[in-house]
Structure formats: C-alpha cells, structure tokens
Length: 126
Image (cartoon, rainbow, N blue to C red; front, side, top):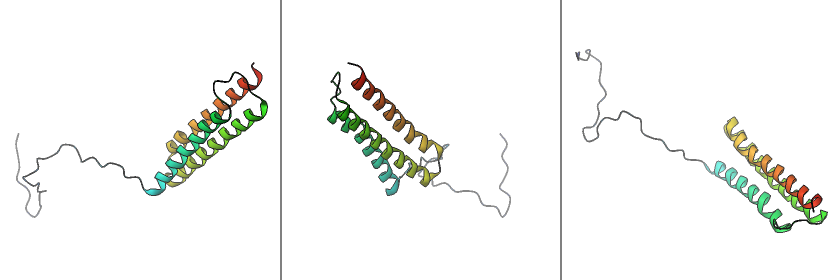
C-alpha cells in the first residue's frame, strides 16, 4: 500500500491516543421529550379503558348477557379506542411520521372489532 504525504496547508484529523479509532459511529439513543411520553401514556390509558372496563361490566366468562350491559361495555371499548386514536393523531401531528399513526391506529381498530364480535356473541348467541 502506497501512502502519500498530506498536502501543505491541510490539516489531518487528530484522534486521541487513549481511544482507538472506531469503524462505526457512536450510537445515539433516542431521548423522547415530555409531550411524546404524555401521548404514549394517553395511548396506554386508552388501551386499558378499552380492554379492562368492558371486562368489569360484562364478565368475559359469561355465555350470554342482557343487551344493556353489553352496549355499555361496547361503548367503553369504543371510548378507549377513540382515546388511542387521539393519542396516535397527536403523535402524528408532532412528528409527521406515517408509521406513528399506523402503529397507534391499527390496535385501536382491532380493539373495536374485537369488542363488536364479543358484543354480538354475548347478545345473540346463547
């Protein structure tokens, strides 16, 4: 391997002798700000409301139930999913990243679909 001298008037980067040269850049870990953590916490709260509150109204082990409690449980599921969607929308507005809205909205839609299926089986299937 042939080497050439540095041209005059041009400096070379100096590396401290205590640290060896790295072939890879240092890893910069993400540090979310307070607003992002608030939206993530709001999304998690919506998930808890969408899943736990209906289970407290109509037990998951019941084979059938009256229409009133089933509709109330389904409305709690939809309310929790709306909170999840609002949190996902807030994160999307902050970062303008489509993946953030997808990761927030898909579980909300899945929770509502599951709530509709459970409401139908507890009301109409005996």
